[in-house]
Length: 207
Image (cartoon, rainbow, N blue to C red):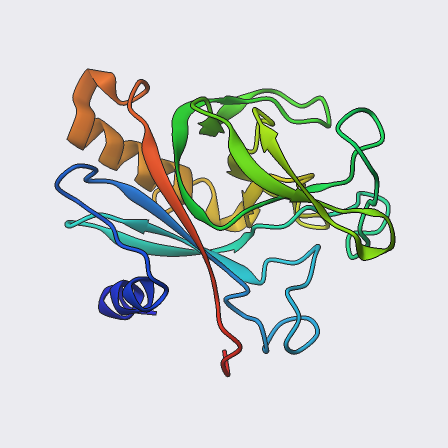
């Protein structure tokens, strides 16, 4: 998808972006490879069938991503639950505009070393949780739904937005490009500036 195509699709979805107020954006498209990865027509779990884009006037980049939670025992399964305590279901971030992300250290649930990522540090976000018998239910709060590196055999997400590990580091990797732009735009305030994340759904097309 080109920069112009992405802008057109954002408009068609009823959304918009403002690069005067926010010169750096992250755009997510859930189900980007809806018909060409996993089960056709289904927004699968446990695979990188979504897309994240870094959007700015000078730089535009795309990355294979995952925007859904995945069960660590079986990535394609839901983890159903109820309520908002220890028995709650997996959370899927709702589509919409989330101006809640700052550069900060993500702490992996696996116990690995913290590393730089885009982390939920602002207001609460709205999610939809896996409910018993398909009765999914809404929730809202500070859930630490970060944008971070995924794994090779697992997408490493219980609600976060994750990038394929081959596209995370390196000179053209997501975090490198995003940080470089943030430093250029915000200078010494790059860690203290909210980066808007717009998440939209992909319609059922031939992608």
